[in-house]
Length: 230
Image (tube, rainbow, N blue to C red):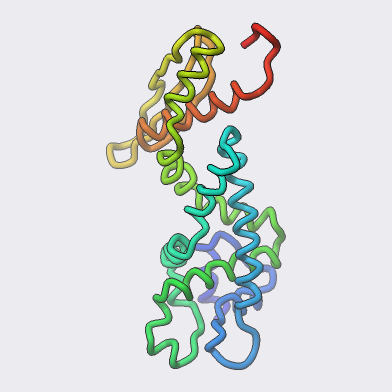
C-alpha cells in the first residue's frame, strides 16, 4: 500500500515521515473499527483557515479586513475543497465502508472536502505549520492570483482618486511585458506617477495584471509619508 500511496504523496506535494498518518487521513468513519480522519479533518480546517489568511494578507497588504474575510470565504468552502480533492484524485484513495461505497461516497462533495482537510491536518502533524502552509500555497496559488483579484473592489477608481488628491496627477498605466504561448500568456503591468513606479502586477490576462499593480500601488501609498514627499 505504501508504494502505491507514493503517487498520492507526489501529487499532494509532501512525503510523509510517518506514512501511517496518511493512512488515517484517508480513512472515512464508515470504514469500521480503528482510527478515522474526523480529528484530522478538524485540525486541517483550522490549519487551512490560518494558512489562507496568512497568504491573503501577504498577497494583498492593502486589502481591508472585510475584503480579506470575503476572499477567504470564497476559497475555504466545501465546493472549492471538493474541487481540490478531485484535482488530486483523492476519491480513488479513500477507504470507505460498504454502504458508503455503494451510495457513491467516493465522489460526494462533503466527503471529498473533509478528506482534503484531513490530509492537510496530517501534513501539519507530520511536518509542522510551515510545511502545511507551503502545500496549501501551491494548491491555491492560481485561485488567489486570478479568481480573487478580478472580483475585488474597483481599485482603478480608488487609485485615481487617491493620486489626484495626493499628487494632482492621474496614474500612468504601462503594459511592460507579454510572454508565453497564446494558450498560456503572461502579462506584466506597471503604474507610475511622474515617472516613479508605484506598482507592478503580473497575471494571465491584462486585467489581472492591472488589478495586481493597482493593489500594490494602493498598499504603498497607504504607508505614512512625510509631508510633500512621495
